[in-house]
Length: 358
Image (cartoon, rainbow, N blue to C red; front, side, top):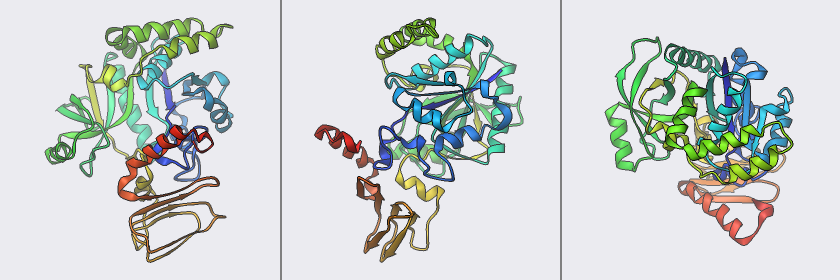
């Protein structure tokens, strides 16, 4: 059967002050009429029944996620006791699914991407699942054709074209780390590289075998956790064993070493909504290049991003290329071109012990 795994444990620090520890980016309504995680689940459509969906998040977010998904049973929402990146998250989900469905095919996706339209996404997932069914040892991922030399994304270098599917698909030559500007420009010019979307389709058994070969200590601890699942010792074992795991991404743990990998050129629109500037791509801009969410008056304001509520007016006068974000207890005013610096703001709050603003 086909199972959907939504990874929802991120902190979304580049969206501070809207994104907080208790309400990170994936739980916010930044674009559209529902939260990012709700949109992610809804675009799955009817291809994934309720009992074939799982959300892996952080323990502190389980209650908030559960409120957004009243249709899911409590067992479908797994709360990790601490953050250990994507490889342990995916390995745990694969083990849990395999208990009742040893031949399970997994579709793994982040909770905070914008993907439209949903029907093209569903069709692409079906094509990827068919490729896995044809060769169960195969791993399929989705590449996004780059539109500019992005330094914030990993890249996938494509190889020979695959002729066994109607989708535009290629063998994967190599996964590349986030590049420097000059390298990113060369990737774009070559036409042989995709942005790595972080969405994968594979058999649960395939990814578990890959972890067994590349990360045996991680898998051993995950197997200990799952062995206690459903027992009175579950919480204790989960916290002890998971906390002892080394944090590692699935790209580093598996994808950079995998041999039989196929990349499908995504037939849908995609954005990872990585920070405030990404709202311009999804919400749009006015005649002065401003992106506005909420109640705002702008005089002599251009190239700026303003995010507030409908009951709190923000007025900007003489601003250019500025981010202004208002929340009830914190307001951010930042240079739009130093968006990465927002992470440093969060670090400064942590160093000062101002937990009420994190």
